Length: 239
Image 1 (tube, rainbow, N blue to C red):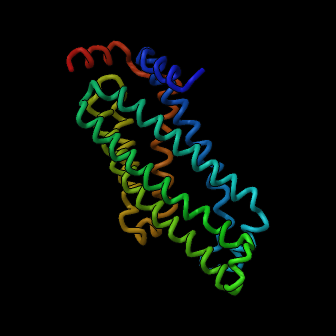
Image 2: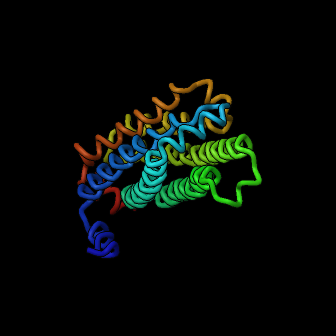
């Protein structure tokens, strides 16, 4: 089945089916994120030599992390499209604005993946790199990973605004519990701590727990409970 046909079928699905599809895709996003983050232990902060040794010794894991990141982003883009459709009856402009912030965050983090992959080229032992000392190559590889981390943090800020807006839309909706809107707003505030990385680092890992648990709560609710179809249709008709 082609992607176009699949998206057309999703578009024609009932609101309840869309909600459960969104929950499933959101859950897959979490699972691929866990795989992607499993490669983070290879990076030893401030130790370029140890980081280079870890990457070269576990190159398949490092590449798996990169692949998982790409799938993770693709899934979040799908969640963004599904959420836009689900929350459009609440407020179309606000739902569109939320989608914009999410897609902007995805674009920034997609670009950051280039910096994540760059250490493999730097440490690959190509002949043209022989003009550099091993210590210089190690430092350059770590620098790329630092740049990746900084770009990743910028993307998290956009996701913070996205979660805040989704929280507002849920709170104003009549087809999902308002407590989920409150939780998503807390998730947005947690991700917005990345506006100032020292603050995010100071609050870590508690800000990460708050954001992840809030988004996971919405994921499980959509997957298990879905939404109130009658109220969704009423709100859609009113819109």
